[in-house]
Image 1 (cartoon, one colour):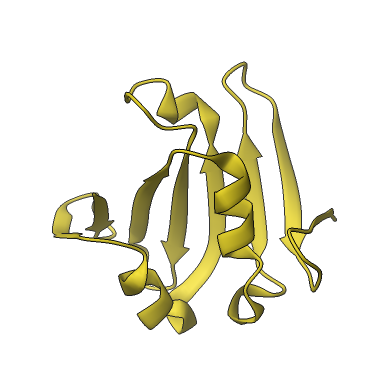
Image 2 (cartoon, one colour):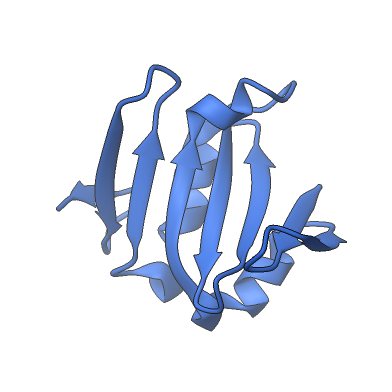
Length: 106
């Protein structure tokens, strides 16, 4: 289940799938792929967080990291930053570029 939050962290709504994010792609400012947060949940490989221009965010689980990357490499997301957060605290910022399954370091 995916969730949309407002700028104060209040849950606005639960949505069924990634369709909400694709419909609101123009509102996305950046992404985080979080491995640390996923350890608090069962059955997911990573959590994708889309930060919105209004200060809110969209959050969803992916059971497979490579499927998450494939989803992010859609042309509507080219040029957006993706922060990778690992469970041991390291972070890296990448940019979505043209290319199948490709994220590039800044």
